[in-house]
Picture (cartoon, rainbow, N blue to C red):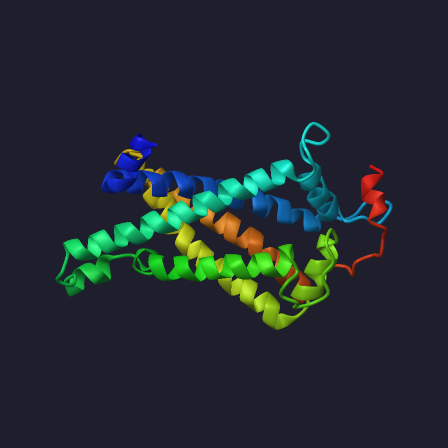
Amino acid sequence: MKRFALVFKSSIGKKFIAAITGLILFGFLIGHMAGNLKVFTGSTEAGVPHIDEYGHALRELGSPFVPREFVLWGARTVLLVSLVFHIVVVIQLARQSAAARPLPYVRNRQRAASLPARWMMYSGMLILAFVIFHILHFTTGTIKLGTFEHGYIYSNLHSSFSKLPVAAIYIAMMIALGFHMFHGVWSLFQTLGLDNPDRNRALRWFAISATLVIALGFVMVPVSFVLGIMPDPVEYAVQLLNEK
């Protein structure tokens, strides 16, 4: 704990923590996006959407060796801790940077700064608010923007994203996530010492490509529902999942 406290107190340590937690969150986004794309893979012969099966499998992961949802909640805990530390150290680094430069940047340096970099703090706060909203919407069902029933993921998505205002909110937030993620991934390479003049071009293209793939992967879901491309949900008994 003492070593961690020392790392946490130093600027270099804070940057390292921001990079590692950012890497964890980046990995989660890749997995979450890939899972969401199961909405396009159809249903079983019994009418159970594959994305519902996927959600059920996540809850049953590790069973019967560990209690139901144990692994899922373990992963959620890691993500929550990573998110909290990421936010805290980024805010602290921003304050340190502002304190070290009491005079504002000269105008030409502002123009040179990339748009994602200049809006990193704003997009980060916006994304944090969206994460809370998203959990209350699709995980707990506290925010009712359509019909909601635990376990029926496809039906919940169809009910919410068929409404243009709801789909528009999610699409706009995925664009904001893209801006934030591009600069974050590129900064991650720099903080971990992976950048080098010989490979910076490739790393930058990776950051751009990863950002586009993940953002577009997320955007495809609400767009497909709001355009009426996706079929209506089919009623099925949740017991069908437990029989598999």
